[in-house]
Image 1 (tube, rainbow, N blue to C red):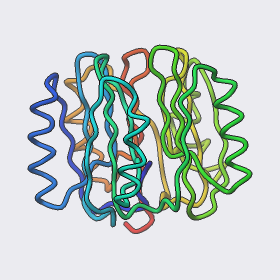
Image 2: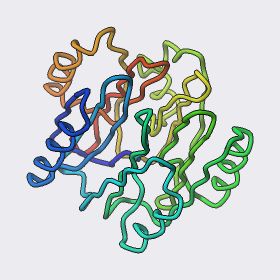
Image 3: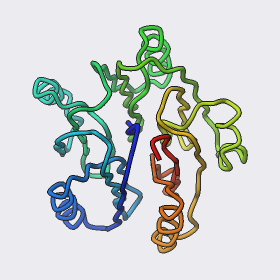
Amino acid sequence: MIPDQCTSQLAFVSDKWEECFESIRSKWQEGYVISSAGFGDPYYFIVMDQGTGWGKQDILISKNFPQLEINDYWDRKLDMSHVFHDGKQWFVIFTANTAANGQEWQYKQSWEDIKRFIRTLWGQKRFVSAAYQYQGNYFMLMSGGPERKEKWLLNREIPDDVLSGDYMKELNMFISCITEVDGKIFTVFSGGTGISEQFVLKPSRIEDVAHILEENWLEDLFISDIAFVRNELYLVFSQFMSK
């Protein structure tokens, strides 16, 4: 799930979850929220934003996919916003005051079942909020809210016109979810977001990320999503209309 706006952003990378969580708790106190998160062996990558309008957050960590616990968080008015796995356990991030108006999810061993689920929920005016695959199991989250037209691509590599952003401009739809599916890149494009410009970068080294972030932040371009595909990092940079 991506926010519709952002006024300030920071990011941190670590090979130790404990270090990441310490930083997360500190930044929560300053009004930041997790806007994107993922893992590519051995690194956790966390992005946090201010000015999203989102509220309090909680992180559920579980060895097995936490099917039973999700309803407890929904009862507390917390929506699922991000899901990832670090090879040992699941991380599910819950967020208050998102644009979601009801959520449904599926966790299946069949990608065909997941595709049918997406198309069925599109017919009920729901949109893709999060997706993830781990060891042959596929997770898909759909949310209600402002009506959005969506489409997806599933490619071995991201096409050049998607990397540059030309595809999004022509389509007038922007990347709202990117993840790995069976070694390919599953990319969802949505209309009706708060995004006005977007492109995708693939850093050749994790050490280059800090410079890339600083360079784009100076241009009011923020990370709206990240993905590790075949353990390679992809960064989706967006400019929000409110800027």
